Length: 523
Image (tube, rainbow, N blue to C red; front, side, top):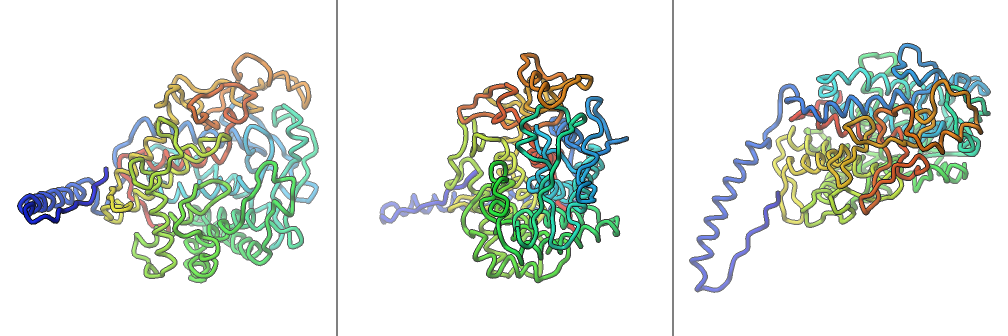
């Protein structure tokens, strides 16, 4: 809802009408303020509200995709009969145990950059919405999945200035169509170091471990280890600046970085939350903020660009009485976060036009759902920051919006994903009655008892029948701009899920799973 500023006439003979209009406006303003307060402008206290079954059911489904993507020795954690142990010797050539972690998408690669982003977002969701997750028995699964990744990331950082950022050869991997359990091809390791730096991936890994150190704070030993690695990786990232896309050109085909400044700010922001060390806050609000933050410009939140996430995360400090809220740099992050929110609300005067006719945020034809879901997650967070702090309105070029307007937007994107769209299709596999049957996913497309290897497995990609295994919880790429979707195993543009998509949909659904959310303190 928006409220347009009143205007007044200037002709003397119109004075009476104007006076009546002003009186009317005053009455409306008073009523509006009372309404805003009754709708949640006052601080929220107490436990989460009533469970919203639709989102609770979807969250339980979405969480399962992390189990499907696990590598290593699954043991008791294996919840799917068609999954088993895999890549048990990953890292052995460097005398490291890199067997854990998660496969990136429908392939069998371990790409450190998006995997670390997955962990950071999952940590953020747990920190903000762990109470809501617990209400529907999803907090333990979320923490378990997060630890599966952070165990891997710790092992991938054997020295202060060395980080292994990739396991597997993309050309070899993409030349095969096989189950991970039978994979026998070489799994080379790729590292960054002082002579081949990778600032963005080192900083993103620092962000992942710093945020996770807060999640696992009750386990002081593990939390301390996470924080130690996070600090070392941030120092490495900042001291030896250079893009990993330049150091390792072959990665640019798959996860090309468009810059590392956003990851440096993102990592320092998480380290400030994890440590309280003001040097990290000074890092993001001083010269580095001026150079990298793009203050005043709304951007999209994704595995490649963390600026919008950083702005929302740092605005948290201004909502909840941080001692440094007068910091001008911090205020610039808050103002930029507000610009992001204003761009998302559909009837805002600064609303983005990057939407489908049905209102889905649409930025890229490849993995189209990442941006709307990530945007909705940020909107849910910002709405709850406003409500929890008693902030009644958000101003967008003179128009006023309430926290409920942001939540309405977040729900619209979630509902689209879950089937409220022109295709009447759920893009979350396993949710509803109509969801993709031909997901571009090796393990899901081949029966567990099939005797196939690298090359003969391609017959399963080409089969006309639906996948024999359901990739439960997979958030596929999503629709084209014209709101069509081709359910075809060969259509990796639309039908391939990713682990980081899993993180943002879990974050969004966790924020919506109950009717009200009071965000807690991280510390």
